[in-house]
Every structure is written in C-alpha cells, then in structure tokens.
Picture: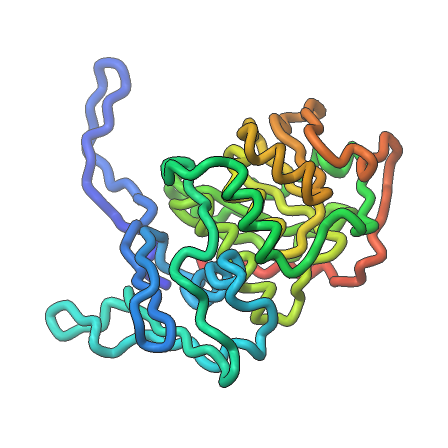
Length: 290
C-alpha cells in the first residue's frame, strides 16, 4: 500500500552543516473497525494489512478463533475525502451463529484503572487455548538470533526508523510472518489476523518476537493466539510476568546479543544448539507489502 510511508521536506542539521532533504515518515492514520455494521473501535495504525489487523483484534478480544467464524471483511465505500475512499473504515461480518462480543470483553491497557486480578481473570475466562502443555523447545542460541532476524525483515523500518515489529518464528528460528506498525499492539494483531485467516490458530510451537517491551497487553495477545513463547528486546511489566506464569507461557525480556532474562517458562529453553521444531508449519515468511 502506497500510504505506508509519507515524504516530507526537512532541515537536516549536522554540527554546522545545514541541508534541505526529503525524509520518509511512517504513516499513521486512524482505522475504524466495525462489527456487523456497528462501530467497534478506532485504532491509530500504519496502513497496510488492515484485514489482518481487524481479524487479529477480534482474536485478541476472544470474539473469534477460526477463519470460518468470519464471513467477510471489506472496506466501507462511504468513508471518503474529496470523493476518494480513505480506506480507513472497514466492516467485519461474523458468520451466522457466531455471537458478537460484548464491548471490551476484558481490559488490556495500563491506563484503564482496573485491578490486576480483574484483568487476569478476564483473560483466563476468554482464552480458548492454554500454553502450558505446549511442547515447544528452543535453543538459547536460536533465541539470541531472533532480534537480528526480525530486524532483517523490517523493510519499512529501514526507510523510516519509526515502526515497531512483531515476528512469528519456529523454534528453529525460521520466520513465518513479520508485521510492522506504529503501534506495537497493532503489529501483533496483524500477526494474529494473518494466522487466523491462514487457518494456523492456535499457534502451537511458535515464538513471538517483538521489538519493544513486553506489556500485559502483548502477553495477553500471545495467550489468545495460543503462542507458547514471547521474546522482547526490552522489559516486561509485573502484570505481564504474572499472566505469563499463570498461563504457562515462556516470557523472555532484555534480549540483546547473547544476553537475556527468562522470567517464566525456563523449561523450554535449552543451552544446547540446533533444537528443532516438530510443528511442521513451513519456513516461508509472509511480509507486509513494502
């Protein structure tokens, strides 16, 4: 999609040198998601993979868990500026018999003011799959390689430097799908939506690698997608660690070079080399359009 980046004239200053230049910015636009014609939510996102974003949001909310639970996803023709479709409003139609979710099934933001116990109980109630029994194993060396592998797949970041990334990998470190967005939670929702529409849920024996910190919201999304391992380059929050421990998810933070902190689920991490996956998901990576 051409609106992934936006060009802007800037003044570039380097010590005493001043030059005019064109800089590429990561696009940020609102996306209104409607459910069966009724407005559900608005999120600020980088345009592209919008259908995956909407589907993944519904996975995160516990509304759907299989591709056949969604009948259609389409852009709304009525959302226009100067007669041109903005592609910033889309409608998701659930399949007949699939109940629409209640507004905000559970709480995900750190600013909602709801206690941690309520948030944990809501995830426990809505989640369709449990990570605790997942048989994924991965080598420490494979985990250490994931930030570099994720970075290598960030095509839009190379041009803008302004996007978060989320990547889905096999325990052998093979990339399955990478998504970028100005919002870290959107990047993960785009991954979950891709998996839903491809018939891959639950995401057994996979590793979710994110470019930022591991918030409660991201752990919750991993749980809702059936992901057993979440790795992040930065810190987790206390509630994220608590949720990961309760759900049997392996949570790794401060993943930088050969250094990492394993907060929960250390049984899945081997000090050996070359631990491979029995998942059989394939190694073709699905990337966002550049």
